[in-house]
Image 1 (cartoon, helix red, strand yellow):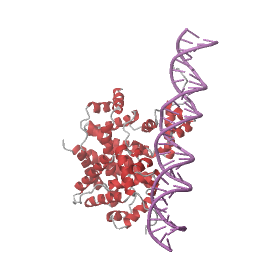
Image 2 (tube, helix red, strand yellow):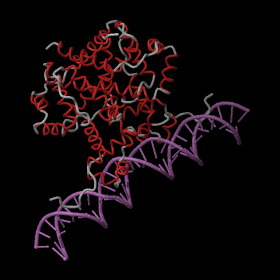
Image 3 (cartoon, chains in turn blue, yellow, brown, purple):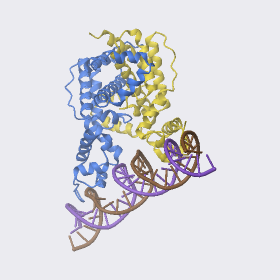
Image 4 (cartoon, protein in one colour):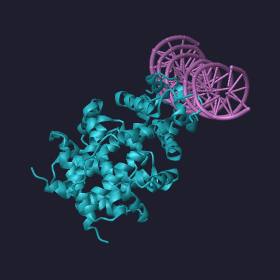
Length: 211
Length: 211
DNA sequence: CCCTTTTCCGTACGTTGTACCAGAATACTA
DNA sequence: TAGTATTCTGGTACAACGTACGGAAAAGGG
Protein backbone atom coordinates (compact mmCIF):
# COMPACT_ATOMS: atom_id res chain seq x y z
CA UNK A 1 0.00 0.00 0.00
CA UNK A 2 0.93 3.64 -0.54
CA UNK A 3 2.79 3.23 -3.75
CA UNK A 4 4.68 6.02 -5.38
CA UNK A 5 6.65 8.88 -3.96
CA UNK A 6 5.24 9.94 -0.61
CA UNK A 7 3.83 13.47 -0.33
CA UNK A 8 6.17 15.96 1.26
CA UNK A 9 3.36 18.22 2.43
CA UNK A 10 -0.32 18.01 3.23
CA UNK A 11 -3.39 19.80 1.98
CA UNK A 12 -3.85 21.17 5.48
CA UNK A 13 -0.38 22.69 5.42
CA UNK A 14 -1.15 24.38 2.12
CA UNK A 15 -4.47 25.74 3.33
CA UNK A 16 -3.00 26.91 6.64
CA UNK A 17 -0.20 28.74 4.91
CA UNK A 18 -2.72 30.40 2.62
CA UNK A 19 -4.79 31.52 5.58
CA UNK A 20 -1.71 32.90 7.29
CA UNK A 21 -0.88 34.91 4.19
CA UNK A 22 -4.41 36.21 3.76
CA UNK A 23 -4.62 37.21 7.41
CA UNK A 24 -1.40 39.17 7.12
CA UNK A 25 -1.66 40.76 3.68
CA UNK A 26 -5.13 40.14 2.30
CA UNK A 27 -6.61 37.68 -0.16
CA UNK A 28 -4.61 39.10 -3.05
CA UNK A 29 -1.43 38.02 -1.29
CA UNK A 30 -2.54 34.42 -1.66
CA UNK A 31 -0.69 33.60 -4.86
CA UNK A 32 0.41 30.12 -5.72
CA UNK A 33 4.08 31.13 -5.63
CA UNK A 34 3.85 32.86 -2.28
CA UNK A 35 1.90 30.04 -0.68
CA UNK A 36 4.43 27.56 -2.01
CA UNK A 37 7.32 29.64 -0.71
CA UNK A 38 5.62 29.82 2.69
CA UNK A 39 5.82 26.07 3.11
CA UNK A 40 9.12 25.69 1.26
CA UNK A 41 7.73 24.00 -1.82
CA UNK A 42 7.87 24.74 -5.52
CA UNK A 43 4.89 26.57 -6.93
CA UNK A 44 3.68 23.69 -9.06
CA UNK A 45 3.74 21.25 -6.18
CA UNK A 46 0.64 22.88 -4.78
CA UNK A 47 -1.39 21.43 -7.62
CA UNK A 48 -0.94 18.01 -6.08
CA UNK A 49 -2.99 19.15 -3.11
CA UNK A 50 -5.39 21.62 -4.66
CA UNK A 51 -6.96 21.74 -8.13
CA UNK A 52 -6.60 25.49 -8.58
CA UNK A 53 -6.56 28.81 -6.78
CA UNK A 54 -10.33 29.14 -6.67
CA UNK A 55 -10.71 25.81 -4.90
CA UNK A 56 -7.89 26.79 -2.57
CA UNK A 57 -9.95 29.76 -1.43
CA UNK A 58 -12.98 27.50 -0.98
CA UNK A 59 -10.84 25.34 1.26
CA UNK A 60 -9.60 28.36 3.19
CA UNK A 61 -13.16 29.46 3.85
CA UNK A 62 -14.20 26.04 5.02
CA UNK A 63 -11.10 25.69 7.17
CA UNK A 64 -11.75 28.87 9.13
CA UNK A 65 -15.43 27.92 9.35
CA UNK A 66 -14.24 25.01 11.48
CA UNK A 67 -12.37 27.20 13.94
CA UNK A 68 -15.06 28.27 16.38
CA UNK A 69 -16.25 25.61 18.74
CA UNK A 70 -19.74 26.76 19.44
CA UNK A 71 -21.31 26.26 22.85
CA UNK A 72 -24.00 23.62 23.04
CA UNK A 73 -27.51 24.79 22.31
CA UNK A 74 -29.45 25.95 25.34
CA UNK A 75 -32.92 26.00 23.86
CA UNK A 76 -33.09 29.79 24.19
CA UNK A 77 -33.00 30.70 20.54
CA UNK A 78 -32.16 34.33 21.19
CA UNK A 79 -29.09 33.44 23.19
CA UNK A 80 -28.07 30.64 20.89
CA UNK A 81 -28.35 32.78 17.79
CA UNK A 82 -26.48 35.58 19.47
CA UNK A 83 -23.67 33.19 20.33
CA UNK A 84 -23.55 31.99 16.74
CA UNK A 85 -23.51 35.49 15.33
CA UNK A 86 -20.84 36.58 17.78
CA UNK A 87 -18.68 33.65 16.81
CA UNK A 88 -19.04 34.61 13.17
CA UNK A 89 -18.00 38.14 13.99
CA UNK A 90 -14.94 36.96 15.88
CA UNK A 91 -14.07 34.82 12.90
CA UNK A 92 -14.27 37.73 10.51
CA UNK A 93 -12.18 39.86 12.82
CA UNK A 94 -9.54 37.21 12.92
CA UNK A 95 -9.76 36.75 9.14
CA UNK A 96 -10.63 40.10 7.58
CA UNK A 97 -10.60 38.61 4.08
CA UNK A 98 -13.54 36.38 4.96
CA UNK A 99 -16.42 38.76 4.16
CA UNK A 100 -14.97 39.40 0.73
CA UNK A 101 -14.25 35.75 0.10
CA UNK A 102 -17.77 34.78 1.09
CA UNK A 103 -19.44 36.85 -1.62
CA UNK A 104 -20.58 34.54 -4.37
CA UNK A 105 -19.11 31.40 -2.82
CA UNK A 106 -21.83 29.36 -1.20
CA UNK A 107 -21.59 26.60 1.35
CA UNK A 108 -18.43 24.95 0.16
CA UNK A 109 -17.49 22.30 2.70
CA UNK A 110 -18.35 20.32 5.77
CA UNK A 111 -17.45 22.94 8.34
CA UNK A 112 -19.65 25.43 6.55
CA UNK A 113 -22.48 22.94 6.62
CA UNK A 114 -21.79 22.37 10.29
CA UNK A 115 -22.33 26.03 10.99
CA UNK A 116 -25.57 25.83 9.07
CA UNK A 117 -26.65 22.78 11.02
CA UNK A 118 -25.91 24.54 14.28
CA UNK A 119 -27.96 27.56 13.22
CA UNK A 120 -30.88 25.42 12.16
CA UNK A 121 -30.80 23.75 15.54
CA UNK A 122 -30.69 27.06 17.35
CA UNK A 123 -33.84 28.20 15.59
CA UNK A 124 -35.77 25.02 16.16
CA UNK A 125 -37.65 26.44 19.18
CA UNK A 126 -39.02 29.23 17.02
CA UNK A 127 -41.17 26.74 15.17
CA UNK A 128 -40.40 28.42 11.89
CA UNK A 129 -40.40 26.24 8.76
CA UNK A 130 -37.08 24.99 7.46
CA UNK A 131 -36.88 27.18 4.40
CA UNK A 132 -37.51 30.26 6.51
CA UNK A 133 -34.85 29.31 9.02
CA UNK A 134 -32.47 28.73 6.15
CA UNK A 135 -33.17 32.15 4.69
CA UNK A 136 -32.79 33.83 8.04
CA UNK A 137 -29.40 32.23 8.57
CA UNK A 138 -28.28 33.67 5.27
CA UNK A 139 -29.48 37.07 6.38
CA UNK A 140 -27.66 36.79 9.68
CA UNK A 141 -24.39 35.91 8.04
CA UNK A 142 -24.89 38.73 5.58
CA UNK A 143 -25.54 41.08 8.43
CA UNK A 144 -22.39 40.07 10.28
CA UNK A 145 -20.31 40.39 7.14
CA UNK A 146 -21.73 43.81 6.48
CA UNK A 147 -21.22 44.94 10.07
CA UNK A 148 -17.65 43.71 10.27
CA UNK A 149 -16.82 45.19 6.90
CA UNK A 150 -17.88 48.62 8.08
CA UNK A 151 -16.07 48.05 11.36
CA UNK A 152 -12.83 47.28 9.58
CA UNK A 153 -13.27 50.00 7.00
CA UNK A 154 -13.82 52.54 9.73
CA UNK A 155 -10.68 51.41 11.51
CA UNK A 156 -8.30 51.40 8.57
CA UNK A 157 -9.15 53.96 5.90
CA UNK A 158 -11.20 57.07 6.56
CA UNK A 159 -8.32 59.09 5.19
CA UNK A 160 -9.09 60.46 1.76
CA UNK A 161 -12.60 59.09 2.06
CA UNK A 162 -13.42 61.41 4.94
CA UNK A 163 -11.98 64.26 2.92
CA UNK A 164 -14.14 63.30 -0.04
CA UNK A 165 -17.28 63.16 2.05
CA UNK A 166 -16.36 66.37 3.79
CA UNK A 167 -15.92 68.32 0.59
CA UNK A 168 -19.06 66.84 -0.93
CA UNK A 169 -21.05 67.71 2.15
CA UNK A 170 -19.58 71.18 2.25
CA UNK A 171 -20.84 71.60 -1.30
CA UNK A 172 -24.31 72.19 0.06
CA UNK A 173 -25.97 69.15 -1.45
CA UNK A 174 -26.73 66.36 1.01
CA UNK A 175 -28.00 68.52 3.84
CA UNK A 176 -29.16 65.56 5.91
CA UNK A 177 -25.85 63.87 5.51
CA UNK A 178 -24.21 67.10 6.60
CA UNK A 179 -26.41 67.18 9.68
CA UNK A 180 -25.48 63.64 10.59
CA UNK A 181 -21.80 64.33 10.08
CA UNK A 182 -22.05 67.51 12.16
CA UNK A 183 -23.93 65.58 14.81
CA UNK A 184 -20.63 63.90 15.48
CA UNK A 185 -21.55 60.37 14.57
CA UNK A 186 -20.99 59.27 18.11
CA UNK A 187 -19.48 55.94 18.98
CA UNK A 188 -19.95 53.06 16.59
CA UNK A 189 -23.13 51.21 17.41
CA UNK A 190 -22.67 48.39 19.82
CA UNK A 191 -22.54 45.05 18.06
CA UNK A 192 -24.57 43.31 20.74
CA UNK A 193 -27.37 45.81 20.43
CA UNK A 194 -27.52 45.70 16.64
CA UNK A 195 -27.33 41.93 16.67
CA UNK A 196 -30.28 41.92 19.03
CA UNK A 197 -32.22 44.13 16.65
CA UNK A 198 -31.53 41.79 13.82
CA UNK A 199 -32.29 38.59 15.65
CA UNK A 200 -35.39 39.76 17.47
CA UNK A 201 -36.63 41.88 14.64
CA UNK A 202 -36.22 39.33 11.93
CA UNK A 203 -37.47 36.33 13.83
CA UNK A 204 -40.42 38.24 15.22
CA UNK A 205 -41.39 39.49 11.79
CA UNK A 206 -40.91 36.09 10.25
CA UNK A 207 -43.27 34.64 12.83
CA UNK A 208 -45.84 37.39 12.46
CA UNK A 209 -45.69 37.16 8.71
CA UNK A 210 -48.99 36.20 7.06
CA UNK A 211 -49.42 32.86 5.35
CA UNK B 1 -8.08 77.84 -22.72
CA UNK B 2 -7.91 74.11 -23.31
CA UNK B 3 -4.30 73.90 -24.24
CA UNK B 4 -2.69 70.75 -25.50
CA UNK B 5 -4.03 67.90 -27.52
CA UNK B 6 -7.76 67.46 -27.02
CA UNK B 7 -8.97 64.21 -25.44
CA UNK B 8 -10.28 61.64 -27.88
CA UNK B 9 -12.52 59.99 -25.30
CA UNK B 10 -14.20 60.81 -22.03
CA UNK B 11 -14.09 59.36 -18.57
CA UNK B 12 -17.76 58.54 -18.91
CA UNK B 13 -17.08 56.53 -22.06
CA UNK B 14 -14.42 54.56 -20.24
CA UNK B 15 -16.63 53.89 -17.24
CA UNK B 16 -19.62 52.94 -19.38
CA UNK B 17 -17.57 50.48 -21.41
CA UNK B 18 -16.29 48.94 -18.19
CA UNK B 19 -19.82 48.55 -16.87
CA UNK B 20 -20.92 46.95 -20.12
CA UNK B 21 -18.08 44.45 -19.87
CA UNK B 22 -18.76 43.67 -16.22
CA UNK B 23 -22.45 43.18 -16.88
CA UNK B 24 -21.71 40.73 -19.67
CA UNK B 25 -18.75 38.78 -18.32
CA UNK B 26 -18.20 39.73 -14.70
CA UNK B 27 -15.81 42.04 -12.90
CA UNK B 28 -12.79 39.98 -13.90
CA UNK B 29 -13.50 40.77 -17.52
CA UNK B 30 -12.81 44.43 -16.77
CA UNK B 31 -9.17 44.53 -17.77
CA UNK B 32 -7.50 47.68 -18.98
CA UNK B 33 -6.84 46.18 -22.39
CA UNK B 34 -10.37 44.93 -22.88
CA UNK B 35 -11.92 48.19 -21.79
CA UNK B 36 -9.61 50.07 -24.11
CA UNK B 37 -10.47 47.78 -27.01
CA UNK B 38 -14.16 48.29 -26.27
CA UNK B 39 -13.88 52.01 -26.98
CA UNK B 40 -11.23 51.63 -29.68
CA UNK B 41 -8.37 53.10 -27.71
CA UNK B 42 -4.93 51.91 -26.76
CA UNK B 43 -4.64 50.35 -23.34
CA UNK B 44 -2.43 53.07 -21.93
CA UNK B 45 -4.72 55.84 -23.01
CA UNK B 46 -7.13 54.87 -20.27
CA UNK B 47 -4.71 56.21 -17.70
CA UNK B 48 -5.49 59.69 -18.91
CA UNK B 49 -9.02 59.27 -17.64
CA UNK B 50 -8.56 57.00 -14.66
CA UNK B 51 -5.66 56.67 -12.21
CA UNK B 52 -5.76 52.88 -12.02
CA UNK B 53 -8.01 49.84 -12.15
CA UNK B 54 -9.10 50.12 -8.55
CA UNK B 55 -10.33 53.67 -9.06
CA UNK B 56 -12.02 52.59 -12.27
CA UNK B 57 -14.11 50.17 -10.26
CA UNK B 58 -14.92 52.88 -7.74
CA UNK B 59 -16.17 54.95 -10.63
CA UNK B 60 -18.21 52.06 -11.99
CA UNK B 61 -19.90 51.61 -8.63
CA UNK B 62 -20.72 55.26 -8.34
CA UNK B 63 -21.95 55.42 -11.92
CA UNK B 64 -24.50 52.67 -11.45
CA UNK B 65 -25.45 54.18 -8.10
CA UNK B 66 -26.71 57.12 -10.12
CA UNK B 67 -28.97 54.99 -12.32
CA UNK B 68 -32.14 54.66 -10.26
CA UNK B 69 -34.22 57.77 -10.05
CA UNK B 70 -35.95 57.25 -6.79
CA UNK B 71 -39.51 58.41 -6.26
CA UNK B 72 -39.95 61.46 -4.05
CA UNK B 73 -40.29 60.77 -0.36
CA UNK B 74 -43.85 60.31 0.82
CA UNK B 75 -43.30 60.60 4.55
CA UNK B 76 -44.28 56.97 5.04
CA UNK B 77 -40.93 55.62 6.06
CA UNK B 78 -41.92 52.00 5.51
CA UNK B 79 -42.94 52.64 1.92
CA UNK B 80 -40.01 54.94 1.23
CA UNK B 81 -37.48 52.50 2.59
CA UNK B 82 -39.08 49.67 0.68
CA UNK B 83 -38.80 51.69 -2.52
CA UNK B 84 -35.16 52.38 -1.81
CA UNK B 85 -34.38 48.77 -1.05
CA UNK B 86 -36.24 47.59 -4.14
CA UNK B 87 -34.31 50.01 -6.29
CA UNK B 88 -31.07 48.67 -4.87
CA UNK B 89 -32.16 45.16 -5.65
CA UNK B 90 -33.03 46.05 -9.23
CA UNK B 91 -29.64 47.66 -9.53
CA UNK B 92 -27.87 44.53 -8.37
CA UNK B 93 -29.90 42.40 -10.72
CA UNK B 94 -28.93 44.63 -13.59
CA UNK B 95 -25.30 44.62 -12.45
CA UNK B 96 -24.56 41.28 -10.80
CA UNK B 97 -20.97 42.30 -10.07
CA UNK B 98 -22.16 45.04 -7.73
CA UNK B 99 -22.49 43.05 -4.50
CA UNK B 100 -18.96 41.77 -4.91
CA UNK B 101 -17.61 45.16 -5.86
CA UNK B 102 -19.24 46.78 -2.85
CA UNK B 103 -17.42 44.67 -0.29
CA UNK B 104 -14.70 46.78 1.26
CA UNK B 105 -15.29 49.80 -0.93
CA UNK B 106 -17.20 52.41 1.02
CA UNK B 107 -19.10 55.41 -0.20
CA UNK B 108 -16.93 56.39 -3.10
CA UNK B 109 -18.70 59.15 -5.01
CA UNK B 110 -21.51 61.62 -5.21
CA UNK B 111 -24.17 59.25 -6.47
CA UNK B 112 -23.42 56.92 -3.59
CA UNK B 113 -23.77 59.81 -1.19
CA UNK B 114 -27.00 60.74 -2.91
CA UNK B 115 -28.41 57.31 -2.15
CA UNK B 116 -27.34 57.76 1.45
CA UNK B 117 -28.98 61.17 1.60
CA UNK B 118 -32.19 59.73 0.24
CA UNK B 119 -32.17 56.97 2.83
CA UNK B 120 -31.54 59.38 5.66
CA UNK B 121 -34.47 61.43 4.48
CA UNK B 122 -36.72 58.40 4.27
CA UNK B 123 -36.00 57.55 7.90
CA UNK B 124 -36.51 61.05 9.23
CA UNK B 125 -40.11 60.34 10.37
CA UNK B 126 -38.83 57.55 12.59
CA UNK B 127 -37.21 60.10 14.84
CA UNK B 128 -34.13 57.91 15.19
CA UNK B 129 -30.82 59.66 15.76
CA UNK B 130 -28.55 60.21 12.79
CA UNK B 131 -25.93 57.65 13.68
CA UNK B 132 -28.59 55.01 14.09
CA UNK B 133 -30.17 55.81 10.74
CA UNK B 134 -26.74 55.65 9.17
CA UNK B 135 -26.07 52.23 10.65
CA UNK B 136 -29.46 50.94 9.58
CA UNK B 137 -28.86 52.03 6.01
CA UNK B 138 -25.65 50.06 6.00
CA UNK B 139 -27.56 47.04 7.24
CA UNK B 140 -30.22 47.43 4.60
CA UNK B 141 -27.71 47.56 1.79
CA UNK B 142 -25.95 44.58 3.29
CA UNK B 143 -29.19 42.65 3.37
CA UNK B 144 -30.03 43.45 -0.21
CA UNK B 145 -26.55 42.45 -1.35
CA UNK B 146 -26.82 39.23 0.60
CA UNK B 147 -30.30 38.47 -0.72
CA UNK B 148 -29.42 39.16 -4.33
CA UNK B 149 -26.22 37.17 -4.06
CA UNK B 150 -28.16 34.12 -2.94
CA UNK B 151 -30.76 34.79 -5.62
CA UNK B 152 -28.14 34.83 -8.34
CA UNK B 153 -26.20 31.91 -6.89
CA UNK B 154 -29.36 29.84 -6.78
CA UNK B 155 -30.08 30.64 -10.39
CA UNK B 156 -26.67 29.90 -11.86
CA UNK B 157 -24.74 27.21 -9.99
CA UNK B 158 -26.34 24.59 -7.78
CA UNK B 159 -24.69 21.95 -9.91
CA UNK B 160 -21.80 20.31 -8.10
CA UNK B 161 -22.71 22.24 -5.01
CA UNK B 162 -26.04 20.46 -4.68
CA UNK B 163 -24.21 17.18 -5.17
CA UNK B 164 -21.73 18.12 -2.45
CA UNK B 165 -24.49 19.01 -0.02
CA UNK B 166 -26.43 15.92 -0.95
CA UNK B 167 -23.56 13.55 -0.28
CA UNK B 168 -22.64 15.32 2.94
CA UNK B 169 -26.21 15.15 4.12
CA UNK B 170 -26.49 11.53 3.12
CA UNK B 171 -23.47 10.89 5.34
CA UNK B 172 -25.75 11.05 8.36
CA UNK B 173 -24.23 14.10 9.98
CA UNK B 174 -26.32 17.26 9.71
CA UNK B 175 -29.69 15.68 10.45
CA UNK B 176 -31.51 19.01 10.63
CA UNK B 177 -30.02 20.08 7.34
CA UNK B 178 -31.17 16.78 5.90
CA UNK B 179 -34.67 17.44 7.17
CA UNK B 180 -34.76 20.86 5.58
CA UNK B 181 -33.45 19.52 2.30
CA UNK B 182 -36.00 16.71 2.39
CA UNK B 183 -38.69 19.22 3.22
CA UNK B 184 -38.23 20.42 -0.33
CA UNK B 185 -37.01 23.91 0.35
CA UNK B 186 -40.08 25.36 -1.26
CA UNK B 187 -40.03 28.49 -3.37
CA UNK B 188 -37.43 31.12 -2.65
CA UNK B 189 -38.73 33.54 -0.08
CA UNK B 190 -40.48 36.53 -1.53
CA UNK B 191 -38.25 39.58 -1.59
CA UNK B 192 -41.04 41.92 -0.56
CA UNK B 193 -41.79 39.86 2.50
CA UNK B 194 -38.17 39.58 3.59
CA UNK B 195 -37.63 43.26 2.97
CA UNK B 196 -40.61 43.98 5.19
CA UNK B 197 -39.12 41.83 7.92
CA UNK B 198 -35.90 43.70 7.72
CA UNK B 199 -37.35 47.16 7.60
CA UNK B 200 -40.05 46.71 10.20
CA UNK B 201 -37.99 44.48 12.40
CA UNK B 202 -34.90 46.58 12.45
CA UNK B 203 -36.54 49.95 12.79
CA UNK B 204 -38.91 48.69 15.44
CA UNK B 205 -36.09 47.21 17.46
CA UNK B 206 -33.96 50.30 17.00
CA UNK B 207 -36.80 52.40 18.37
CA UNK B 208 -37.53 50.08 21.27
CA UNK B 209 -33.86 49.82 22.13
CA UNK B 210 -32.97 51.22 25.54
CA UNK B 211 -31.08 54.48 25.74
C1' DC C 1 17.16 -4.60 -10.27
C1' DC C 2 13.54 -2.92 -12.94
C1' DC C 3 8.73 -1.37 -13.42
C1' DT C 4 4.83 1.14 -12.04
C1' DT C 5 3.01 4.75 -9.53
C1' DT C 6 3.02 9.07 -7.38
C1' DT C 7 4.89 13.40 -6.18
C1' DC C 8 8.18 17.26 -7.03
C1' DC C 9 9.18 21.29 -9.44
C1' DG C 10 11.91 23.88 -13.35
C1' DT C 11 10.57 25.81 -17.61
C1' DA C 12 7.47 28.16 -20.39
C1' DC C 13 3.30 30.55 -22.19
C1' DG C 14 -0.36 33.68 -22.15
C1' DT C 15 -2.43 37.50 -19.55
C1' DT C 16 -2.44 41.03 -16.28
C1' DG C 17 -1.47 46.12 -14.34
C1' DT C 18 1.14 49.83 -15.40
C1' DA C 19 5.95 52.69 -15.87
C1' DC C 20 8.17 55.01 -19.42
C1' DC C 21 8.62 57.79 -23.42
C1' DA C 22 8.57 59.15 -28.17
C1' DG C 23 5.34 61.21 -31.24
C1' DA C 24 1.18 63.82 -32.33
C1' DA C 25 -2.04 67.46 -31.75
C1' DT C 26 -3.51 71.57 -30.03
C1' DA C 27 -3.27 76.78 -28.08
C1' DC C 28 -0.52 80.66 -26.74
C1' DT C 29 3.34 83.80 -27.65
C1' DA C 30 6.41 86.48 -30.26
C1' DT D 1 4.22 82.45 -39.32
C1' DA D 2 7.36 80.08 -36.48
C1' DG D 3 8.26 78.52 -32.16
C1' DT D 4 7.09 76.87 -27.51
C1' DA D 5 4.38 74.94 -23.97
C1' DT D 6 1.03 71.74 -22.93
C1' DT D 7 -1.68 67.72 -23.17
C1' DC D 8 -3.15 63.30 -24.90
C1' DT D 9 -1.97 58.81 -27.57
C1' DG D 10 -0.42 54.32 -27.57
C1' DG D 11 3.79 51.11 -28.53
C1' DT D 12 7.16 48.78 -25.88
C1' DA D 13 8.62 46.64 -21.77
C1' DC D 14 8.69 44.49 -17.22
C1' DA D 15 7.38 42.08 -13.17
C1' DA D 16 4.00 39.04 -11.42
C1' DC D 17 0.26 36.02 -12.07
C1' DG D 18 -2.23 31.14 -12.94
C1' DT D 19 -1.11 27.01 -14.70
C1' DA D 20 0.05 23.30 -18.81
C1' DC D 21 3.78 20.27 -19.70
C1' DG D 22 7.11 16.92 -18.82
C1' DG D 23 11.41 15.05 -16.97
C1' DA D 24 13.61 13.89 -12.50
C1' DA D 25 13.06 11.77 -8.04
C1' DA D 26 11.31 8.54 -4.67
C1' DA D 27 8.81 4.94 -3.08
C1' DG D 28 6.68 -0.33 -3.28
C1' DG D 29 5.96 -4.74 -5.86
C1' DG D 30 7.78 -8.18 -8.90
